[in-house]
Amino acid sequence: MKPLKKKEIFNFSIGDFGINLNFQLLGFFLAYFYTDVFGISAWHASFIFLIARAWDAINDPLMGYIADRTRNKWGTYKPYILWGAIPLNLILIACFSVPELSDTMRVAYCYFTYIVHGMVFTAVGLSYSALGTLVTQDQQERAKISTMRMFFAVVVVITIVGSYVTPFVNSQPIVINFIGVDLLTLNGPQFKDEAQGWFYVAVIFGIISTAILYYSALTTKERVDEPVQKYDLKKLPKIIFGNDVLLVLSASMFFNTAIWVIQNTVSLYYFKYVVGIESLQAVFFQWMLPANIIGVILTPILTGKLGKKNVFIMGSLLVFAVNIVRHFIPIPTAEAHTLFIALSMVGSSCMMFCSICQWGMVPDTIEYGHWKTGIRSEGIPLSFFSFMQKLAMSFAGFFALQVLAFTGYEANTELNQSALDGIELLYNIVPGLFSLACLIALLYYSLRQRKV
Image (cartoon, rainbow, N blue to C red):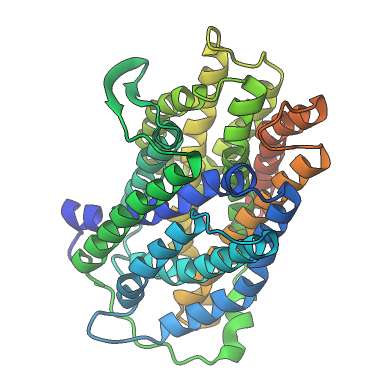
């Protein structure tokens, strides 16, 4: 098989930009949108996140089974990206809409849109990840793809979502900044209220996401020719539970995903209520851009010397340490936030180590499962990863909102000390503990490069 050209790596990897414009907007802001804009309680919102995943326990493996058995003129997995991109982003817009409904119907509307979004996201996200296993089987090329995917998914998208969405929604000037230097100031549209701002953000993100997903799917070739999978549904337990490294990596993915979901879920609460300077969130995420770029540059160098598992463990250890230490430093202010941002930059770079290694290890577990069980399946393992990732998102969102409800959080009011303390713990200590759990899970990952 010929080596991949740089353009081929780019064409596939940029698809993660399209997926994460959708994915990260929900991850960052849907909890806040539900409580502070849509107007439902933190208690109700928490159960929306949790219950939506019950259906995914059935839906995700079925989607993997169907995708594995698909063959048409577009390929194996590409059809689901092409068919699903538009519905996925229409549902994103629905999630950030505020229809005129009764209180009961508003909660029902949130359940319906979030559950349907999860179903369509499985079809698109699973198929995109599975497509990557058919682009190349070369370990180094997979590492390059994983690195570029994380560049688009984390460096680019999180910078956009974290730095520019909030001022856009609040009709404030958008300051484009790099390493403390203001490069450009843009004046966005003036919205009548915050709800209208969120709707238009979802529309813009949805259009861009759809266009990029179509571009990536249409320009990516499935170069690894695998026959249609002939296994039946009763083989699903063997494919999943017979693959020990799949289970271990899935556990580490659960904990690693929970870290950033909890932090991103409470980020706006933290800067709005604890810090008291909502605009400081944009400054914070602008400084994370160079930190994430450093992480992207260093990861392939470190994995080449130490291996993906060891770099993942090292990153998890440093993320744990940064979050614990950050909890005990002074709360940042407009005048003094250097130490807070410096520690956060270290943690953000190390989270890049974890994210890149995590997705770089996924194809290895698929090859291992084929070798160990004799059944070739991309769809089922990836649907299991997808389910574990969404389960982590829902659990983290449920847990964060339950803590807010328990500590007496009331939207758009001056919070009591208990609620403020709860937000601080969720922003620092809890993610640190999840990072430690991720590290412990990785100690049981037995698949090393030599064995691959």
